[in-house]
Image (cartoon, rainbow over all chains, first blue to last red; front, side, top):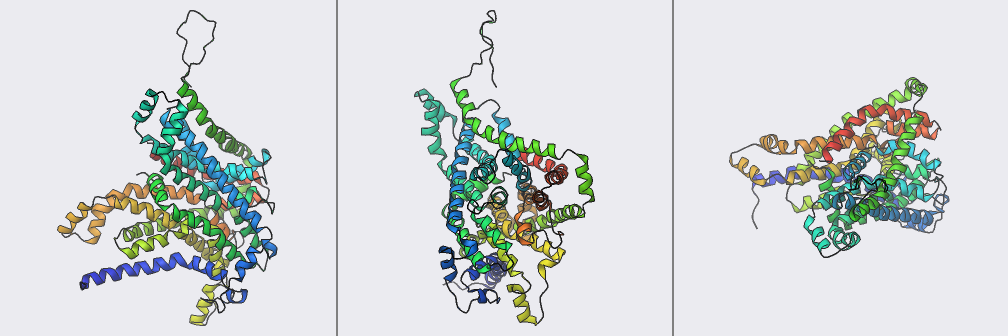
Length: 283
Length: 290
């Protein structure tokens, strides 16, 4: 083994001096959440760095819905799941169709539509929420899952269309021409040539839309209010309504709620980093 | 819409039948779903919202509402200070994470967590850490010094600082990742040549890294500004706009008016931000639609 030189040691030390604070900064809020999830109430409120009696009892309470705030846990989990899945599917459908139309079929006015979509992408989400709330009221959709699904599709699709259009612009035109020569109809080109080639971007966009919908708090809490219609994040926010909120249960539920997106993110990381960040900011 | 005149101008009977190729028909059919979503959930709400905010009395009411002035100042602080600090740290850390070390690669996997997990549980976790009586932070302060820690979220300046901190915690990984991608795209032989010439760390940054990263850095800052304007969670979940409505930003203020059933006031407060947001939006659109 090579003995490190003094200079190498110095560099490594300097890197560690950055790395350790970065690690602590990142992990403390997450560790604190985890700590609450495995602590009985007395330990959680005593500010200890590790509980005297670590327990999984909080998870049991959540999974058996044994608390006033948790009585609809499974329904709310299911709502989050259904809404996220619906947003993923709808966004993929709408954005793929639009990107194919703009990029491959060169539909008249396609460029204008692309610009309008981009414009929407840059409206700050919390600003659009105010008129969106009223609009959903006018459409009679308040307290209906469709309100949240459609709102999230509206927010997710501009970026989806943009990323998919960038990706499909890179596919050679000759592919379509060859398929037309062989007598393929437009739909066949879409299904048999376009979709298979676009798979990596479609995975990235599907994941993006699902995570966006699963994580959304503001729109969910504006558009849904009935206890059996709300999604998990809204239910978490409702914990704060009480003066003596059961924080250890709130953190346990939050921990369970945070696991699926983290797992999905890490599972699809390769697609996410390649497909999204390359498109996110083109310099 | 491509409306082609029929070849036979002499015969007027079939009146200007639009002749589209099958591909164009499919093009219109496939883009229609998005257009419908756009009309129903962007055009209609925006127009309706602007119409609601038309009465000048709304702006007089806003002008007279001290909470609005405070929120505008807070938003400005959030944007100018928060984003610059965040982007500078991201720029610095992107250099750190670009180092080829196994442990740094592992750290970068962990570092992305704040961005990958939903904000509500983590922000609420921070909120409890800062609780003056039971929070971990004040327990630590008490154990170390024997004094009671400050009442963190009860002081508007400290509370707003904490909200900015939460915002940075949440979005720093994303921007670091983007800037790191930018850094890794710089040709390595430039650095090797500089090394041979005996360039210092600062000179390498000043004359190689920064010139290649500059445009990306500015684009990221502007995009981050737009997104931060729409960041409702960091302030709402940490401070709820309190104490005494002193830590609101424009995004939480709009929702506050909405919840108080003052929809036109909510819209008016957003309309006031349009002159600042629109140039940013226009600039970003230009940049991305090339």
